[in-house]
Picture 1: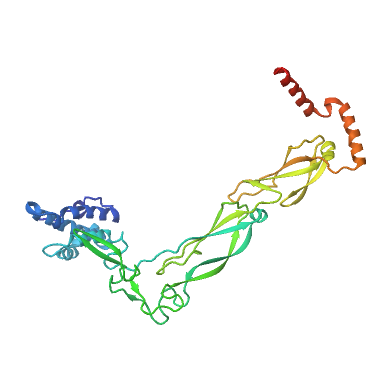
Picture 2: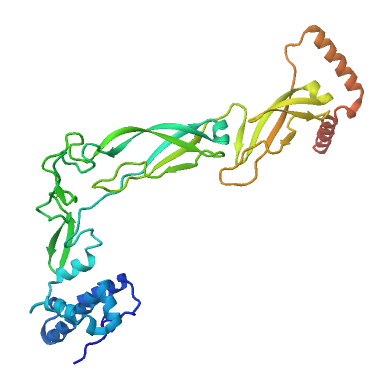
Length: 380
């Protein structure tokens, strides 16, 4: 009798992925396995199980699959026969099927290798001045971390010796426990998943392959960073275990409070006191910026709270975009600790201003008019 197409046996398309092949095999193998079929349909189930097994052994091997796709059964008859012969009379155990399909999920399986672990990521809190955050800078930081032991090169074994394959798991790092029909894998208790045991540990790292060390790193801070931004240094985290890759270091930025400026995204804000004479008469004042002092023209009659915008004197955002502005809020300062002569002059000025009516104090007179209207409405 002619053999059925292997793709048809597994119920998959010819362009099926490796994962799809495994999934189809698992479903059919569990359905037709002799351990799960007894009685009247046992013989037919065993034949189908062998057919499924043969199809999987060919299609799961890239070389055999390529030969089958090009020449059909003639290209793989020898390999398929050898695979089918491996069943014997009773067929492979149900636990073997389970292990073939799920071994990669549990990180082991027959012929596995020791598990490797990526090193942990680290975080470093970096405080910056506003000036450094806006302009960018380079800082050196010291980070305590686990690094690969230089004495043993990360093997954990004394120089001149080497780790030996674990006799319990035979290097797989996993042991298999049979529970009825199912086989469950767990970390080997003898080598703790390494797959190897160290009989003569390195005196420097005591067999861990890693040592604690404080390393100095140079961190380039790009211009425009702000509180909450992170700078990633790839591979500067903790060393991995069993030869695994190192983790990353994340530098968390925190910008210290500035005595003059506050920042809101790309804009800077500041308050600037000016004497009431300058506010009344107008003139120029010097305003501090992160680039130095600039002159700002104050119109006559300027009131407290008036905002002035200095374009391009803010922050260039780290993620791109236009340069921000500096917003200056003016606070008119009332003079204090007056001398007798200054008091006399101000009293004369007050009399002169009062005599001028509302034209010298439009806001005050407008407010008084509103108060009068309110009191009239409430009958006072």
